Structures are given as structure tokens and as C-alpha cells.
Length: 88
Image 1 (tube, one colour):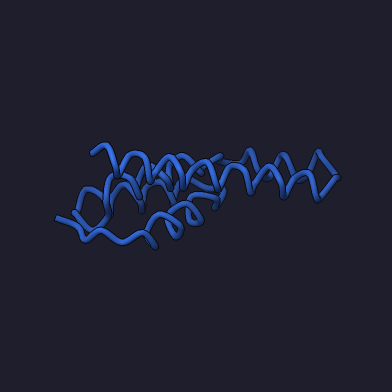
Image 2 (cartoon, helix red, strand yellow; image 1 turned 90 degrees about the vertical axis):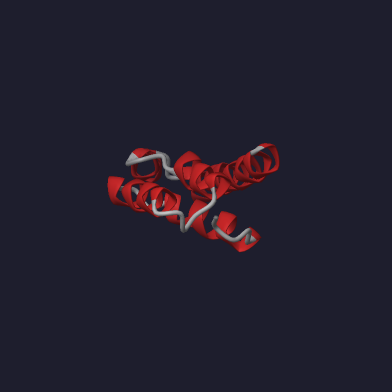
């Protein structure tokens, strides 16, 4: 069983913000190998918005608003991962 580290949630959610599919593949692979908790995997996959963040920053030129959206996405992903870890 994977060790329970709360830092995994924050790191995987941060990795999930990378705008490509490779981050999702890496997180899923780590979970299937048993190196990552289910909640950490969920946190990273929830944060994955694909190229949506790139489109957001290209079309919306209000940087503070964009950073608030990304911060909210990150925080919601971490909280979701924590809840999943509590349930499962």
C-alpha cells in the first residue's frame, strides 16, 4: 500500500496543472504501480484542465483574474483529493 503523505496531494495537483496529457498519464501510471494514493491521483486529475488554461490566458488578458481561477482550481483539486482520501 502507498504511504499516506499529505504533500503528495499538493504536488500531484500542481503536476495536474501542466497543460498536456502526459501529466495525466504519469499520475495514472504511478497510481496503478501503487506509488500514489487514490486521493492524490484524483487531485492531480481534477486539476488537469488540458489546454483550457492556455486558452484562458490567451483570451483573457486580466492576469489577476486568471491567477484567481487557477488558484481556485488548484485549491478545489487539493480539497477533493483530501476528501477522497478520507472516504477511501
